[in-house]
View 1 (tube, one colour):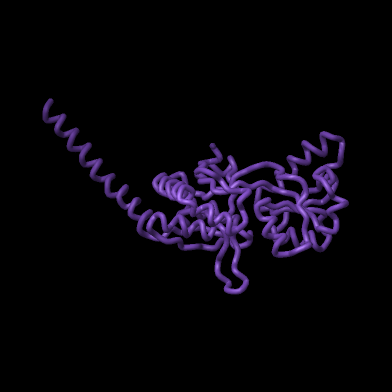
View 2 (cartoon, rainbow, N blue to C red):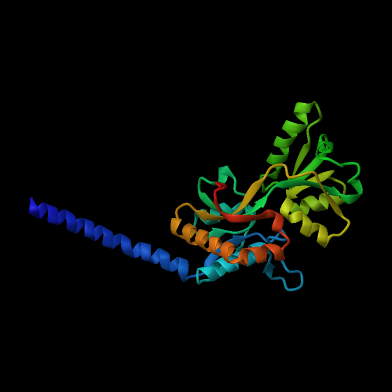
Length: 276
């Protein structure tokens, strides 16, 4: 009986010894090797390229570098398409997604979101039509575009059902575009009556193109933007959550927020999967 107990203890010790190096290796990867972050550089002021230098810049880039510095490492940015983000994360080609991705329930099966900004799809129009399309209800029956790669087209359709159709008004004609830049192009060309993108981007957009656009109403819904980590890597998610909490506590996060004019969309604490 004693020999069997000793044998079981030996097996347990062997198993524990086998698992320990793997855990140690994961921690070393987090704190030592660069973190590869997927990004799409077409969503200013969060993600874009400086026209003068061609270098990646924006709120997400500065936040990512600040988080990495807290962890004693660096970020290796990997540009990709928005459509490839989640598959790249699942296959290990990137460690995290840090590219203005909205935290949606449908994405949480495989991705854990560390929320770092508030967002909300927001109507905007060409400034010359702001008097004609002065409120959100005036969008009923109009052609409204948003990037088909986002949840915005579905958000517009849902809002239309609740605020146009139920009120006996014609529904919004929702048009999926090839990104937010394409939506703006179609808006300027008159092919769209209005467009929708995250409200956090509109102040920057209006500053870059003065007297061109006008926001209408309020966000269709309040959501969160999250840094995405695969649910298979709890250690990395924990490290990044702690680093974000530290940046919020020491004021570094607030400085980055202020630099990019995102004060109205800042978070005051770490939020995981939109659960406050």
